[in-house]
Length: 271
Image 1: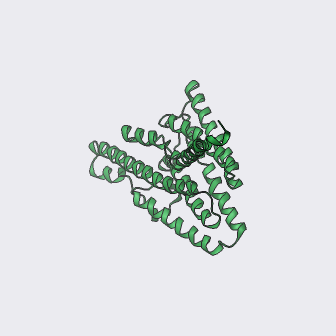
Image 2 (image 1 turned 90 degrees about the horizontal axis):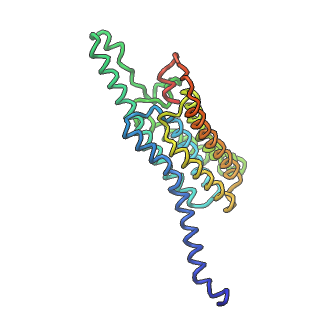
Image 3 (image 1 turned 60 degrees about the horizontal axis):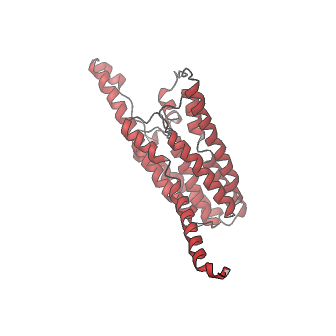
């Protein structure tokens, strides 16, 4: 059989592989959060998951979308950002509902053995996006506060990008900030595990999927000659994922006493 006779088979197969890789890029990033989402719904406990992971991904993907207007990269990466933003908002909604519900349950148990005066003291204050209290930043009582914050950030950065879109230095810096912020994705979870001296409540499946997904994503960046910022920060992201997996091994085989935090207990929950 002549080599040219296989072209009718090879071309469709290459197209299928290309579509598969693009689909994996678009939806693969959200897959790690499915087991974490299910664990939170099942246990009604969001303390093991850092909502700052959502903050990092929201900022990174908003900046990446703005970067696309200055330097058009592949469409799958753009759609990945859109899907990821929606996913992170869903995660935030669930975590907020669970946390507020748990606080109300604790308050009800406290009320059972308290008089009316104590009830007023023990009632947890509602935290709002407009409080401007840094101790409670990203630990608000309503999901709408998170949405307002995201919309404000998008509006401000979008306006700045519109003004500086003709500057190649600004556009390249914006692209670097987008992927570098995403590379820091695992840092809040890494720090939270260090604070708790435990990885309890964190989905190990999520971190394993982070690692495999980030490895695939970095290889995809390199093979498709994506902007250099993507490849460098992809490698950094893989290293952070591996560090979290090392925490899982360390804290499971060598349990350590949790560190008590007496100051600003609500702010430590937000980490």
